[in-house]
Length: 96
Image (cartoon, rainbow, N blue to C red):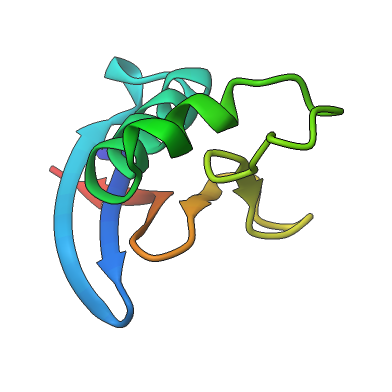
């Protein structure tokens, strides 16, 4: 029987710096977005940059470092966050 898993990967340029598979049943989509944000913050942002992502959008100090983007309208289960490093998450089917 096939099961769906999240493939979460971190990239520095074209070099993979992190990879983990997590069953979709254990990690809902909303939480995947949080995971991506936490990983980008840990691996790529200073304390000041993290704070700037939490400011009001209309603030001139606001930064979009932790915006999670969908990879496209036809790829609901493919998300990315960050610039460099950046982290991605996608759903794949795995057979048991």
